[in-house]
Image 1 (cartoon, rainbow, N blue to C red):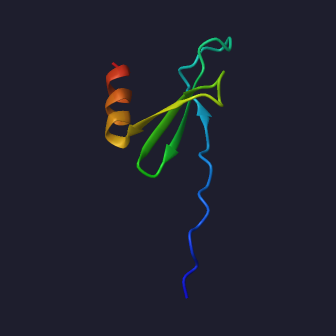
Image 2 (cartoon, rainbow, N blue to C red; image 1 turned 45 degrees about the vertical axis):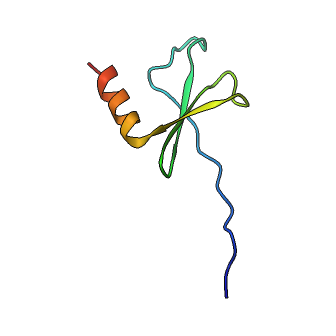
Image 3 (cartoon, rainbow, N blue to C red; image 1 turned 60 degrees about the vertical axis):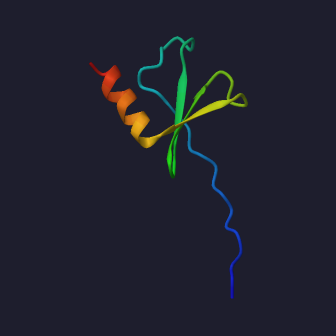
Length: 65
């Protein structure tokens, strides 16, 4: 017996620790099965960018130095 398609859970968004504290520079990210979603927290209904796990890792390590 097949259970059929399982519901897809919504991504859990979190604010970047590098976002400004004055609510002017807020970036949010959410981990997904094949990478990371990134969006502007001031426009949560707007578009998001999907990055592979490898691209996200490269971004984090390049911006840390």
